[in-house]
Length: 156
Image (cartoon, rainbow, N blue to C red; front, side, top):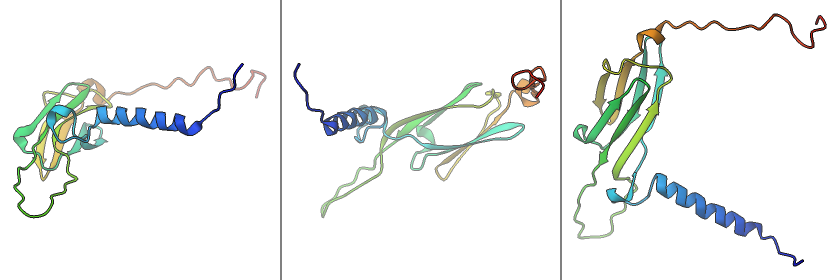
């Protein structure tokens, strides 16, 4: 039987290439929309007794370039951040902005009345107020405390 030398760094490099490929599929760094999702907007969710409040950060996107869809269980937000066309005659232009299509689907912690959603889009922040479904609003769950015995049943 031949001995094979173990090279751990080669395995790490292979793993790195696989992770890079995975991240490129999820959020490509290219700027052309046909290359896939350009970025994933950040979100903040807060639950109150009556509603779910969702804020999504989407700076630089016009209202007409947004598509918001709400189901009883989730919110889907998609759109496009369009790049500015600039003509540079001197020097080099460098940008770290991401342009192109985006989509974010956010699962909700409870069912909502998806036909009663209130929305506001101002200064690059999308705010949604999602009223809870009536059956989930005052839902009380009984907790089963077991049969009252603990341990091995020998009178602890």
